[in-house]
Image (cartoon, rainbow, N blue to C red; front, side):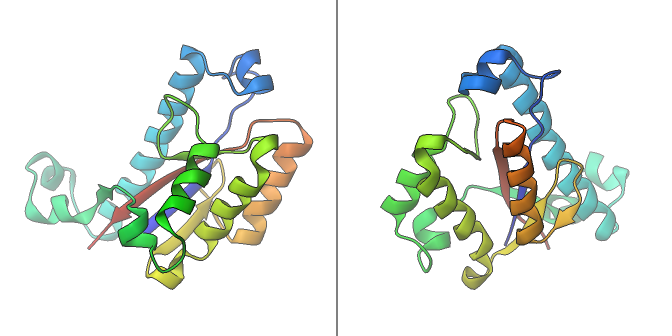
Length: 172
């Protein structure tokens, strides 16, 4: 199992003032989120298909190889993370850091710093539960946890929203 966590790029050109200042999403912000989250999914699936030698023809014909090459899963805290965190504790932290209409993401809120940090630490420790973890910058470059935290800090200095999108997936 794998999880990829990407720092998304919300800024003045693709977001509304309400979202940038108060994390209140408009349809424009939802569209921006959906576009960026699909970008991560496309990046991961294309990478896996290429790595495994899956062709466009395999994908169109839905061969067994193409269907097993990349599959998105739902993260089940009890089943997948039970060794690292209690389900109630995970659900509380995730609820503290979510935005309606955004899925599989965590958002930094000044009044919920502990929950955000708890989830970030959890993501950095998922390999202990057998889940390969990859942190990605806005351009899909893989970075270690220290560099990822630095990217978050840099974004905070410019008062930009911190939105992390994650995809839990399997590949054969």
